[in-house]
Length: 490
Ligand code: 2AM
Image 1 (spheres, rainbow, N blue to C red):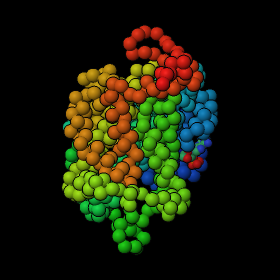
Image 2 (tube, rainbow, N blue to C red):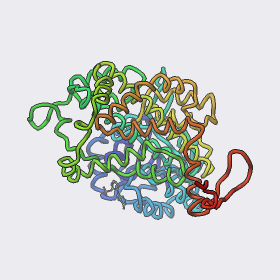
Image 3 (cartoon, rainbow, N blue to C red):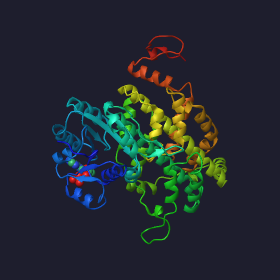
Image 4 (tube, protein in one colour):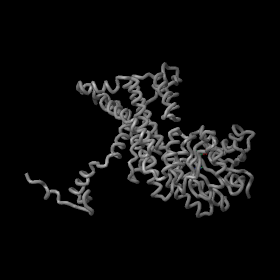
């Protein structure tokens, strides 16, 4: 039996509820189900009252309420709950029905589930959904992957509910990403890039605050200005606003200054870092950002260490002190240099993210379209930024572009930002302010642009102690040497 609902949604936590309301608002009839069935009733009596919803109390009822081929989306806790639901849904569904997982799922699970669901005669979609609660309601960025035959069935609905960008606000931030776990992988890279962006902004804040002496009011003005230029983005915009928020507990001053400096994390940045290590690609920005959160979480240890470990204040010689002053003394020049450091580092961070996507795409045979991935992140999601138009353009012109740093627009941008970037990293280092992401980005840039790195010595060491062999620059072949025998005699 099948009903007349266009879409079914399981899991009525805030994301699920908002997404269901979004779908209904585009003219679709929506069936909903939740394990704790009282939530169904609450929704139907509350936010969904008078709207085109069908509330159901059992999975049987739920599946029966939706028209075939059924589009059934799960927005439940990632992990075993999704497997359990799939197992329950398969026998209730008919051939050709579509199961969609919109949760924050590890892509390997989606790879496996796609095969399992396809083997049962159904279609499977693992969709990255980004944009938080508000995005889910008003227009998220959607990154669907899985059984490609599902796409024509869900395309109109998915593109209708997605965020829109472009001059006429009509380009949806939703396109088919690729087979199996490709959508969830792209979503994970989005989150990893978000880690990098946030860490970079935090470093800019600390520099401007500690070395530039900027007040929260001044920080607001700086971020407001930055948001009108190349750094324009959702994260710069909300950071600007954060600097103007007063303490909501009745205290004096600004709320941001009252917040404990211990970062939380849900783990997608860690996934991306681990996978970068597995692939052997240097995604140093996300990894640095994950570690920076980890160090922040060691608050008690840092508090103890702060009482005994000294910074450079007493050990700088007069020349170094003078240099540090020169680098930070002119307030506006320093603000501009931090801007440039942030911009150049951000370009490196995205370059790394796309290199990882390329490596993953090759490994899993996903045939990802990188320009399209940039477009999916253009609106609705946390890393949305104007800057992504340029990335879309770059991969549009050169689909096989090896590294964003080599695209003329970014090459020139980094070239122009370079002096400020180096000045900021130098000043921070001289004055003892940690800038792990700014410097990781700069080190990647310097490593990537050098034809010769000291890995010749590393290979020599490996061959010396472990006979791991090496190759030569001047002849073909694989070599091993008896290093002790080759020592120059005194
Ligand atoms: P609940 O309201 O019954 O807890 C986010 O946690 C969403 O996932 C909620 O809608 C929650 O349902 C649902 N959820 C969590 N674990 C689940 C499971 N094992 N089976 C079904 N739904 C689950």
